[in-house]
Image 1 (cartoon, rainbow, N blue to C red):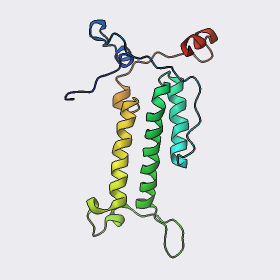
Image 2 (cartoon, rainbow, N blue to C red):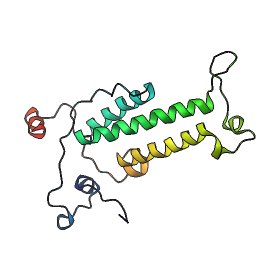
Image 3 (cartoon, rainbow, N blue to C red):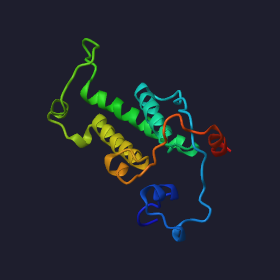
Image 4 (tube, rainbow, N blue to C red):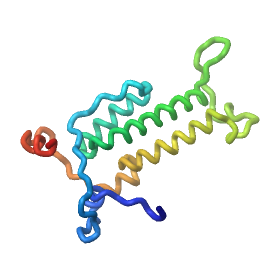
Length: 167
């Protein structure tokens, strides 16, 4: 499909450019997540740490829904891959001592082509994919600038409204 990807109605409302005459009549409204879910067990330590912080922020802002969880999982998984590739490039394990060493990008690339280095290629590819997920969730400065999320005062969530939204 050519052109820009479609925005969900909720994003249009938040951005202030919603028009009822151009909106889908039966757009799905997935259930919101009200508590931070546990990270999937298969995630790496870096991915789990990111899951906990992102999920907490998305739940607090009322953005995270049930059907967003696989995308959040993929985002965190990609971040874990990025961090592992980053460590392989900048903090390799010394074969003599078995300890991690530090090196610069120039030291890593010395006399080599950056496009044929598997760790570097994996790192940049994972970073670009991770950035695309961040944009989808509105977590970059540019994408966040397009959102106008109303603040929910802490402790003022009516339990009846919570039940209503969960139903």
